[in-house]
Length: 180
Image 1 (cartoon, helix red, strand yellow):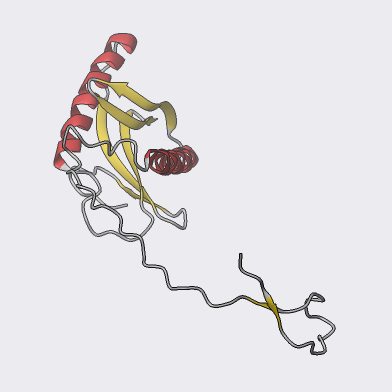
Image 2: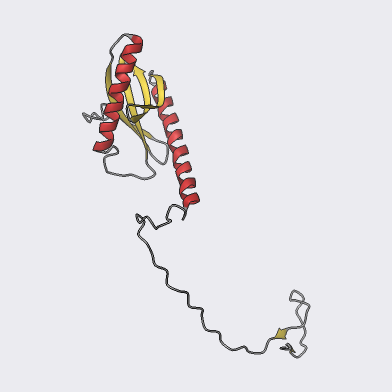
C-alpha cells in the first residue's frame, strides 16, 4: 500500500486549504486503452440502427421547427386579416397535399404557402414537385368548395415568406411572379 508523504510544514495562506499538502509518489505511466474498430454501416443499410441514434434530438428539432412554422402561419393569417381577407382553413390536408392557409379575398380563393426562413436564401422557396402537390390539393379544395356553396370561385396562389425578424414578404400570384 502506498503511503502519502507529508511535505515540510510551511505557513498556509488564510484562503488556502487548511489541511497539510500531500504529495503522492510517482506512478508508472499507463498506456492508453485501444478500442476495437467498429464497422460503420451506411445509413440506408437494413443492418443500421441509425433511427435510434439522435432520435430525441431530431424529434426535438422537428418540434421546434413545427412550432416556428405554426407561429409564422399565425402571423401571415393576421396579416391577411388586416388586409381584409377572411381565413377559411388552416393546414387543410386534401387530395394528397397540404394547404397552409386558405383565405377568401373578395371573390377570390387564396391558397397561401407559408415559408419560414432563418436567413436570407436566394433559392425558390417552393420546389416544382411541391407546386404539383399544392395545385392538386387546390383543385380538390375548389371542387369541394363548389359542391358545398354552389359557386365556383377563381383562385390564386400566394407565397408568404417570414424571416428571422418576423418580417413578412408576400409574393402574390406566385405562379406568375407578381411581387407585392
